[in-house]
Image (tube, rainbow, N blue to C red; front, side):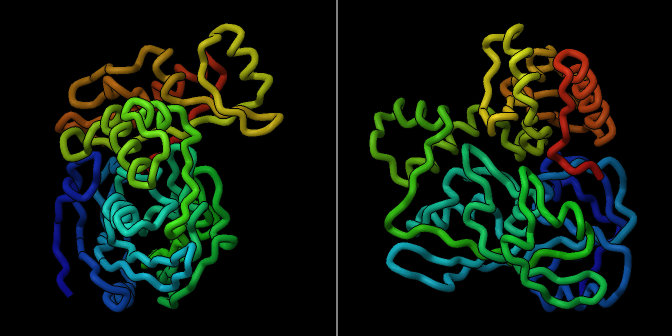
Length: 335
């Protein structure tokens, strides 16, 4: 058991925040995880570090989930069940699926992070959410060290939400996730206009899942900074779902506001648009700021602290609430 001490976590979180862990261990298997949990120490689980903002040193044993492996479990003429271990890089896993003609996750290309953290957030993009293809996940209970299988229903998925963020938060560590994907015959999702525009630009009229993946990658690269170059965690806030009555009032003043009807009573509006209207896009305070191409992305240009980024996020929330009467919720977990 190789435990490291006073370990910098800068390269283990996509914001690139330089905090330290009092203890650190990288886990390669479920067996290793169970042995570490037997130590009965205070734990902090870290996978890809893509959906968190670290604001302080972690005075606990940081468990870095680094177990790898992808396996096909069931196949038919039209579908396949595929299991990925928690430590697999999410984008690499999606590309593996696309390359092998397994459809359903292509719209989720280039999302940073690892497979194990994806169900916690119910990651989503361009009209698709993880829950659409999710079958089950395996997890280890931290205190009892017993293995449990969670079905889709048991995960209680919501918009960027799951049971792992609520009722059983901090109780389980996900070790693998199983998806059911289409094989050979696919349902292509081009519901978001940006995808259709990208396909049209490339004169693609009958897109394959590879075409969709390539289009999403191109769109994300044009809007979102690469965490390897500029520290960030993608979308910092959730897109708010507001009463349609409030939306109608805002639209009367701002006719150009983008929107996505959810049902008769509610409408989703882009948080990035709201933030941009408040004048934050491209602003910078030292090494902390908002990206020049996407107001929804808060960034670390080098040596910003987590607390500095939190301060900016709170300023954004206040301005949006004052201007539009909308409360923005953070998508990123603030630690």
